[in-house]
Image (cartoon, rainbow, N blue to C red; front, side, top):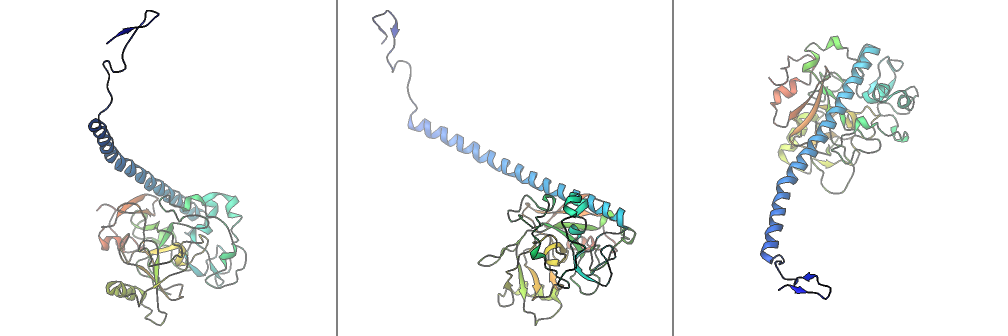
Length: 333
């Protein structure tokens, strides 16, 4: 009931015409807010994942541009892996280990980075120089934003050597050991030949490995046919054949070893099987394109375009794209 104060103003009782929320109403409001969050949050997460995937694709676009510039300057693409290096370094009979990224550091990030890559210095180990003493962080273009381990000297981007890990035979891809592939030698066409893709960086840690991050090691006494042995071991699922690898994968970016900068199309993207390595042999290994992007991986083709490849891609098509002379199908066919 209204009351009149001493100065003539009318004041009302605190309960006149007003009331607080009941418990039921409060719970209803909270339920509605929770429902809205549950509807909006997945969309926000999907948008962020799409943005990271797009950023990763842009990195591969830049790598494709760098490869094109390198080929225009030198007349060939950089090789991948250690061994008897091409003439753009020095004597073709000298043993070196440089990744394609290290060879085209100038194209990737400018002359200041290239000057820090000790390409002209003799290295103290054949096939696997002592890159551990070179503490040179990788340029940002070599790191996928979806991989939290991609820090320091790590790289997420791998160059395609072909379908099978063959040594010393030619595995069929563009970035083969100790060779300098020319654009004219890619008879199937640049638009149908995979140049690079991605793989998650691995770090030594306790416990059984993450199938997308890590790899397993074969007993060196086993068959040198690492591809067949890897398939057999994965099919059997026996841990007695597979040991956890304690060596970092994808670090350093300078090294041309398969462990850090090469991959194959033997398994499909994000295969549920482990990647494999035979003992300490730097050539006998199976490394696969892998990412945390939902549903697949980004792939750079020779003409510079980047496509997102589904985990469920036809395996024969996926393998055909890995070769430079294998009658590939065009993307999307």
